[in-house]
Image 1: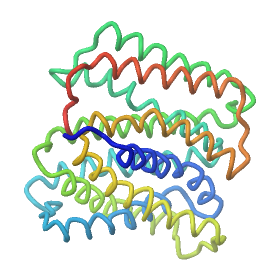
Image 2 (image 1 turned 90 degrees about the vertical axis):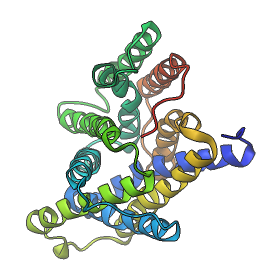
Image 3 (image 1 turned 30 degrees about the horizontal axis):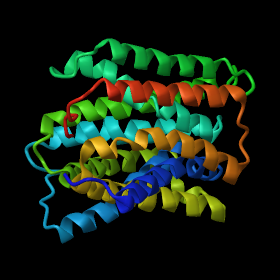
Image 4 (image 1 turned 45 degrees about the vertical axis):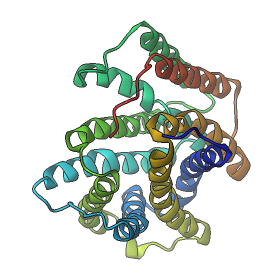
Length: 297
């Protein structure tokens, strides 16, 4: 991997901005669409740029190969459940809170990796990092102004969505020898297949009368934050590696809070700031504890 330059860092920031922008766009989309429909359109439209990329790079898509059960399982755990839970949760809480709660993925993955991955054992610095990060989450839940008895279930749904990403990442290790593009397209295809009948049966999306802003947001969620963002991720991975790309974990919650304030006028309390700092510090400590290159998934 070459040494990152200004263009690489600019692309990393751009990628973080795109992923962070998903949260306020989900909030706008929930004004007109149900959570299952949002999840379905995200995976359906998100697969399009990646199918084009695989066609250009002549990458074989193995969604229906002998490993289909892995693709289907990962698609369900890593896409179907998180996309649904995030959309369901954001309906009742501010999008900036969702961005912060979702940023716990690196902390949760540290704990699960210790249990399920041989070479990812926990150490003192990781324990400190995880403790600091989750202390920030506990402190955030004490903000009665933003999280209360009316929406606490929604907040926990976001955390469960974050857990789905982590478990999906661990499952992906089972097929880690396959190309990233192939794996991503294959799980998107299976997520689409899983969500299609559920969406049509439970929410009947043809009955929606969406606002223009909700329609733009849901298309943006699919094509940009799901499809284009993964294409950019592959470019960053190829040029600079996973360690460099993983730095988006620091930027996404920050941008998520800022974008929620700019586009939705969301309130930023003192506890939000403190929790954000604690989580970012926790992620930093966890990453500092790992001197070797993380496993590529």
